[in-house]
Length: 68
Image (tube, rainbow, N blue to C red; front, side):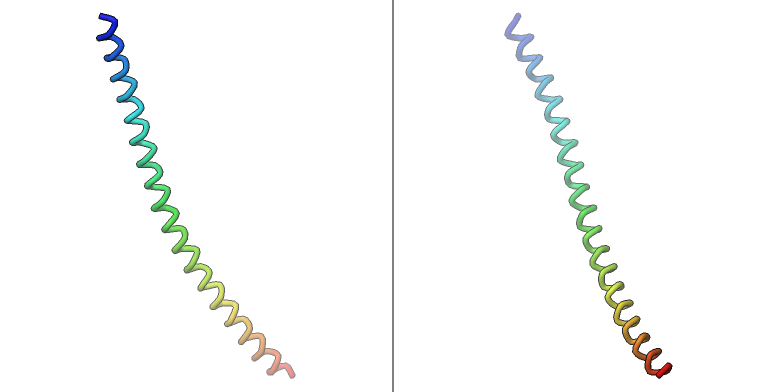
């Protein structure tokens, strides 16, 4: 009887750990996906900032030339 209860309890504990592990794995997968998307967005924003910086330099040169 004790052996049966022990194995039953062990099975319940194993099932709970398995569910928790599956949930943690799914969450980790979502985090990895979100990280990849954020990385791409950051790269795009960096390109836009660089483009605006170049545009500002050109505009500054033109303005200095016009005022000189």
